Length: 438
Image (cartoon, rainbow, N blue to C red; front, side, top):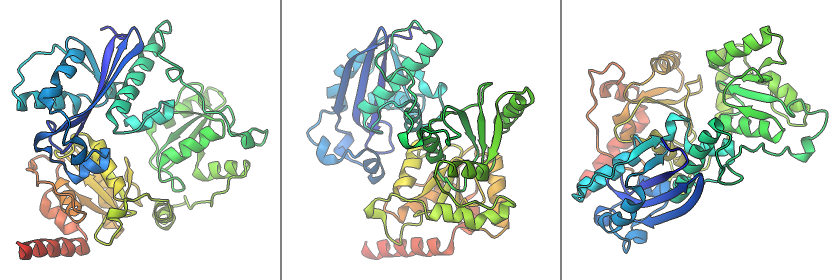
């Protein structure tokens, strides 16, 4: 495969239907250099939008009322994609289906002879997190910005394997964030150290915040432990692979140490950064401290949803498995964060809601059931349960047909039993009001 000549693409949709394309960004790379950037709004079928999609990308019906339809814009797309290698982040779940479904809807019968490359096979993390780590400019869910970022990621990946490959610009080479001058002194124990994080932290409910703090202090933060790693910061539910590798480094006499959250807090105080020591003696004692971290974290919530009917405000939510209504799980995460939730990939003793999709992780469900059995403020919802809760905020989704025979899916009756009585009453009241107005 030619890794220096390819096209990066990103679609945004007006609804959850993949054929409802409302904008496209296309970036053409030739000999490792970005040669062309293309963007267009597209009028989706009937120019209809869902509130959820509008809240994610900001494209509204008034912006596309005069835009070309997909058949009208197709020649521009076709001439850039035909017989090319096409790169996209989560291509197998999103862009591939957007293009194919739109062509089927409008009866466009043509074999574009595309070779698809999904950059999630390179890095499974979200596009936003990857770009933050590698300092790639990104306006997330702007299709041209997403396509440019994807083009950079693929170029960087191939340049890593082949140092002679030409580089597009200064962003292709990984840059170390400059240390804040006020921490550039001998009292800073993190300066120049190679640091890795694992697990969840009470003081930093979003691990990215600790990641950025370490970089500000001049540390080189990585996602995996290598033979050169100096510090492994261990939170709750740490990864065994990282721990075992770091223990091996220590046993081999390398400059390596494993520190827990309180030990890091003590080291941060040497830099004049103060955090309260947390109680790590027993997981059950973490409840109050962890809830403090969650409920005192600055949460950005859209003013439209800042009301008592919104059950997600400041709730700590974990996702597990795959979802029929959100084939791209990042869209569900973005929606929940828009509604004021704090979303994590892991279940901790402070997690309030586990949204369990198909093939949900047994360990997450087991941990959440343990929280429930201890009387904590914790529930497990399947996809239909979360659809009911989203209806309280004005987001309408059709109930899905869940394969109950699948051991990793949860029956709706179980979901509703675990659902807070308050939410049930509000949902019933909403349905009653809608029936009375009809």
